[in-house]
Length: 304
Image (cartoon, rainbow, N blue to C red; front, top):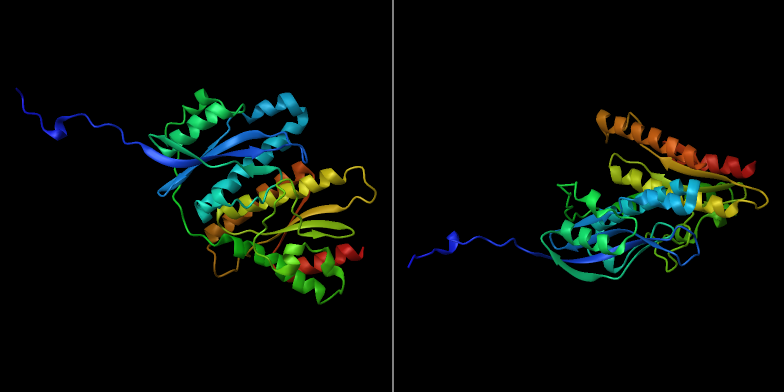
């Protein structure tokens, strides 16, 4: 009888256990109607977000308005990846919905050959805007590792600085800034997933603020803030006294010693892309280099 050694037996593919959750998008603000646009799978080693790849099916439901719905879905998934990278499992247990109409479903247990397999299998079974056959063509899905990035504090510092500039020069104008900014809260948690987050809502100007840095994630965050402006503008349509909607962004200059020439070029490219996107969506993208410029701009527009 032959004497087999353990290493001679074929090895079974090791299974991966993970938590997974669906990502929902409600295209119509205030409506309970929602679609599964992605699934995120996560364990101690990292996470993977499988995106719905048939978002063009929204054209059958929304016609020309589908472009805005697709834009919203893509930004929501970008936000989820950033939040998972920053906060790990907390991003699923206690989501920070910084995007209108987006929510994270209940966590469930999953097991498969990889995190990507977990996410893809469940998305294929629960989403009507996902094409599993097309997804199989992606042979090398990227599984992200968990990192410790304190991005929230740096992004949200700008609005408070603008508030300080404005209120010292025009008493009473501070009431137009959001409660989060006035009270100094760093996180924008809210129980209403359909709420639209606006930083400044004045008599003539509606604005959100963002800080553009060399990291790609900062541009994604700005797109999300821009989408909230778009949603607010849509709600104001047909009302008396239409206000200007602006995405106001602070960015480093070419002489900033903390960034390289390559990083500055990347920032300029991001500005061009964001400007074009804002133009297509009917809002204004306004890049400035410092707080004083931003504060003076707000004072000038509100004084008009």
